[in-house]
Each structure stands twice: as C-alpha cells, then as structure tokens.
Image (cartoon, rainbow, N blue to C red; front, side, top):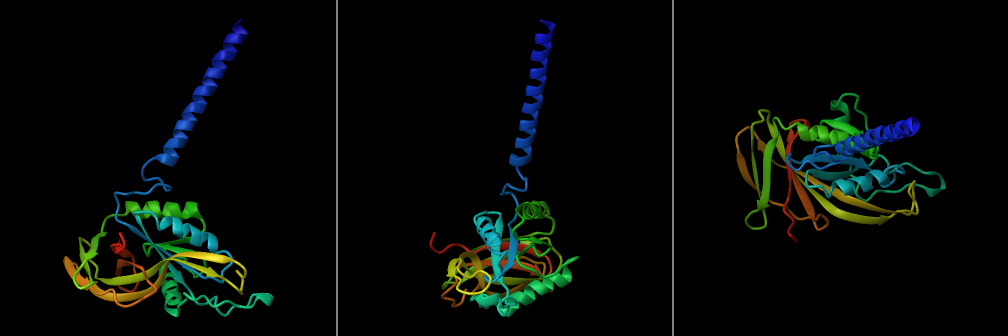
Length: 263
C-alpha cells in the first residue's frame, strides 16, 4: 500500500512539473513582444531584403518577406541586386533579374561598409538600417525585429495620407536631433516570374514588395514638417512607403506605408 501511495505521489509531482513546463513554454512563445509576435504598440520597423532571382538560396527568404509584408508593425521591402546577373550556372547559363538595379547593389554595399562586421551577400535582410541577418533565418530575424521594436527613443512619428491632385501628404514629427532624408520608395506588391535559365531555372518565383524606385523627396531637420509628395508615373508600382533615414544611409528613424488607393 505504501509503495502504491509513493507511485501516486510521484505521478502527481511529474504531472505538476510537466504542467508548469507547458505553461512556461506558452508564456515564451505567446507573450506579447516575443520574437514571433507582432508588437502593435511600436512604430513600424523597416526590413530590406537584398536578393536576386538568380540566387538558389533566396526563394525561402523571399517567401518569408511575403509573410513579414502582412504585418502591421513591419514595412517589408525587396531590393534586387545586379551582381548575380552575369554569373553563369553551367549549362543553364545566366539569368538577368528583371527587377535588379545597380543602385540597389550600391545600397547594400553602403550598409556593408557602415555596419560592424558587414558584408554583402544574398539573401540578406537589413533591419532599420542598423543590423543585418541572413534572410531565411526566421528566428534570428524575429529576434532582430523584437529588438528594433523596443528601441523607440529617437524614433519619428510619420504619417501619410492622400493629398491634393493625387499627391501624398506626409507629416513628420518627433524628437530626433540628427538631420535625415525623406525617401519615397515605390514597389510592386507581388510579382510572379518563370525563371528559364540560371541557378533557379525551371522555377516559378513569387516576389513581394519588389522595389522599383527610390526617390529623395525632402529633408527633415528636427522641426515638424508637412510636405506634399508627388507619387509620379510608374505603371508597374502599386504600393509605396515613406522612409526617414539619417544622412549617408544611416539608421532609419521613422517610416510609414502609403495609403492603399484600392481600400
């Protein structure tokens, strides 16, 4: 009888430990502000993916960017570099990425030169212009996003609303002290491409928030500012965002998505 009582007590203790572990695990993965959860109280974090349709390891990162693009606390942008365009992949030859531009390669190289331990590779995600991670490593990117969401000091409030004559009314205010550039970034929300040659030959790739243009539209010098921004003519682009970035492509101090004209 005493042996049976000891077995019952042992099972009770093990059940309690297991239950406590289950609760703790739930707290880790479901607590607000965890790396896998969106932080809706923070200003949006900008994620720039540097990629290429000729890069075999890039499609998983591009799919992940598509997931991030759905989050309200993230502005996801996909920059296609051009240094893959001339690489020959055996008998499959080479593939010219139709979205690639040399200025996007230069943007990535500028980050690599400025960030500690930086280098250019694909797929590479740059978070708020301050950190970089391999774009397909979701846990590492999630941790970087969580860290960025906690870094609210010096962040600017940016709002974008429809203006007059098809322009956008952009308002910037906040407490940051360093001068910054106001950028209009235009992108294609989704694009499907059948790749015929190169390292990804035979694949059909789906890209999200593919950047088509980056234009300097103003300067923020510390005081609240409101300006009208002309979206300009670009038949391909169907989305845009405003970025406030420190001079010389430093940290991104604030950002906002443009209103969706179809909503």
